[in-house]
Length: 94
Image: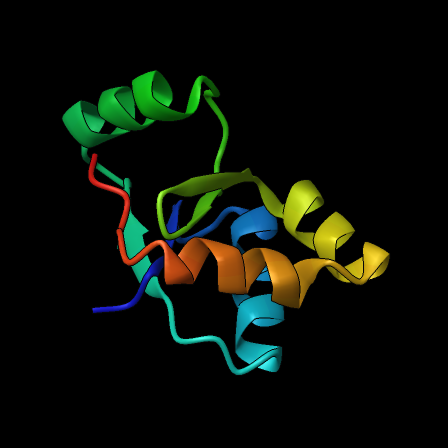
């Protein structure tokens, strides 16, 4: 099981952009759809404190959405943040 989790929808352009970034960096991640699942969507909002998608976790560390993911890459802190989240040995549970 991957320690990187993306919650998103199929047709969200920010979800697509996040998937492309993770794939380009060759990151193994779990892609969980909240399409047609209002219960899961509600739990996601409660856990993340946000009502937008995507919502991304590295381990149990909430990264945020695509903007935050892209900012990590631009700031050069993506790999260190990923390593810290994955080394926690935990995976987010919603």
